Amino acid sequence: MIPFNKPYLTGKETEYIEDAVLTGKLSGNGKYTKLCQHYFEEKYNFGKCLLTTSCTDALEMAAILANIQPGDEVIMPSYTFVSTSNAFVLRGAKIVFADSRKDHPGIDEASIESLITEKTKVIVPVHYAGVACNMEKIMNLATKYNLLVIEDAAQAIDSYYTFSDGSKKVLGSIGHLSAFSFHETKNIISGEGGMLVVNDLKFSNRAEIIWEKGTNRSAFFKGEVDKYGWVDIGSSFLPSEIIAAFLWAQLENLEKIQTKRIGIWNNYYFGLEKWAKKNDVILPYRPDYSTNNAHMFYLVCKSIEQRTILIKKLKEHGISAVFHYLSLHESPFYHSKHDGRALPKSNHYSNCLVRLPLFYELKEEDIKKIIDIITTI
Ligand SMILES: *Cc1c(COP(=O)(O)O)cnc(C)c1O
Image 1 (cartoon, rainbow, N blue to C red):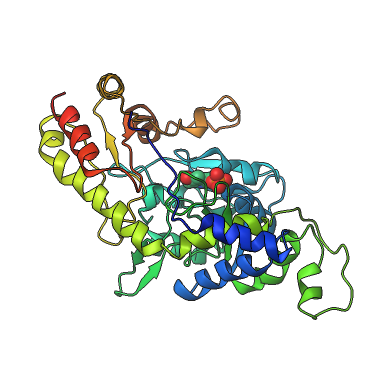
Image 2 (image 1 turned 90 degrees about the vertical axis):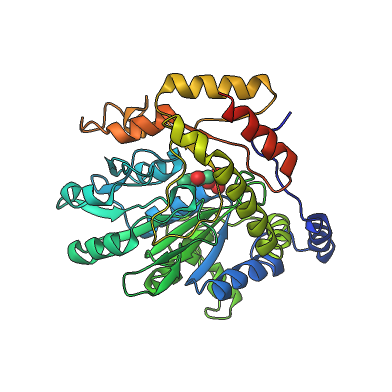
């Protein structure tokens, strides 16, 4: 059996967890939380970083920070994970779903401006498969219409965007706020886990308060106030030190993990290139302004029938290939709330996209086997 995903352990996770346990500090915002947050702030030049229990939680924090009120509109792709949307719906927002690009499952940037109204507050670009959205275009729209940009960077660790003037910025550092995931299916993991990045520092104090259940506890421990109490809304968004210790072991190996994943990704790409062309299957596209962080290797089949055959054939050989999102604008929860616009490209990816196994311990002979099976179909 070749699974779709297998969480990779670097070997130090349990050692650091034991250390966290032995120091007797198990709740959040301790030594390992700070190590991880500083790592990100320094390596990627992020604003303020706050570890969270999931990317879902980081997005919920972002929606609170954006001060979303009932009736506010938030623009995002329909082809995304439910948490991207739910975080804003929880605050009463109306989601205005955009279609995907023709060449990529990410948001069709060209369609965004026509969706902006008086009520629009936020644009949420989702960097699907770690491939950057056109952030220059999106940030320009945000400036023009005075909107916030919240990057769903769940899949986007260690991936970069190049602006037209040649300057380069890591994904997650461009929007006013960004959310990352360390769920076990992502490149860098902690089981469940995530991070809020606050690039617009005017949100930084409030972010800490929301993170700590609506109290100014963080300011108290930094000696900035002499007692702490309830000052705002919030929740328990911070993970325990056990999670942060696990994450620290992963971060120490980030480059090794990335190099390995990119190698696997390239093997797939070059092994399937000819076959894909012959069979009208589309391999992952990457605009010149984005790097590839090898979060995912996917194929876009020409029809749902073709995809069904592919998944079935691979399954017969013990290989797990899986499709991905179902358009949120057609979901049981949201279809009656959607404004009725057809989003055909999003539906096309729902029907035709399939993801191949990609994880650190995937062996070269397994990749070869997967390619061999696919190319006989
Ligand atoms: C994984 C993922 C999330 C959710 O991450 P969790 O850490 O599981 O909450 C949100 N958005 C996208 C695009 C994702 O891929």
